[in-house]
Length: 297
Image (cartoon, rainbow, N blue to C red; front, side):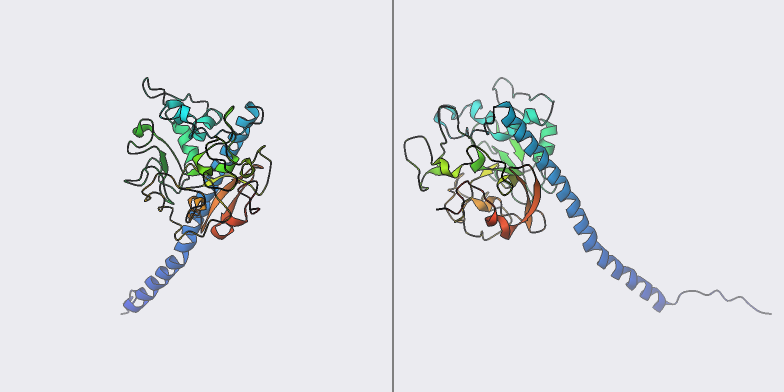
C-alpha cells in the first residue's frame, strides 16, 4: 500500500525565500522613498505657482507696483499695520475667497486655513516651528511671524509658512522710497536718508526667467548677495539659533543661507519672476540673478 507523502518546504528553502523577499524590499524602499519625495516636491511646486500667480494679480491690481517692504518704517513699528503689511497678508486676498478674520479688536489678521495650505511646503511640518525659535524655521519646520511673544502682534496667531520672498523684488512704500535696515552697510546706502540704493532692487520688476521671486526658505524673506559664502549647513536651523532676530545680507554666511536648504533632494523649488517654477540645486543658487545688480559690484 502506497502512502502519499506531503511535500513541504525545508528550512533551508524557507530561509532562501525570506532572504530573496528581504533583498527585494531593500531594493524597492529607496525607490519608493524617492518617489514619495518627488511627489511632495511636485505639490510644493504647485504651491509656488499659486503664489507667483497671486503676486502677479497683486501687481495688476496696484498698477504694476510690487509688494512694498513695510516692516522697517518707524511709523508702522509695533502696530497691526506693520504686521498686516507682510507679503503673506497682502497676497491672501488673491489666494482665497475665504475672508481674513481679525484677532479680537486688535486689528491683527489671522491666517485662513486655505492660505496656510498654500504657504507651507508638504515636506515641512505645518503648524509647528522649531521649539524655542524666535520665528524662523528649517528644512523640516515652518517659520512663524512672530513666535514666543517676540515682535509685534499676538504670537499665537502668527502667520506661518515655508516659502520666502526674494527681498530684492520688494517695491517702495509710497513717499518713503526703498528703505530697510537690510541696506545699512551695503555699497551705495546713504545712512539717515531713509532710502537705500535702488540698484539692488528689481524696479520696475521684470519678467526675468533667471530672477527668483520666491522659494523654499527658512524665513519669510531674505536678501542674498553674490558675495555670500557657502553656509556650513543646509539644515536651515542656523538662523533659528541666532542670538539676534536679524542678520545682514553681507554677514557670514549671509542671507543666501536662508535659501540654502536640503528640502528637495539637495536643493529647493524656486518660482521665478516670469512665472515658471523649477528645482534648483544648492550649488546653483549663486548662478541665479537674485538682485538687479547681481555680480556687478
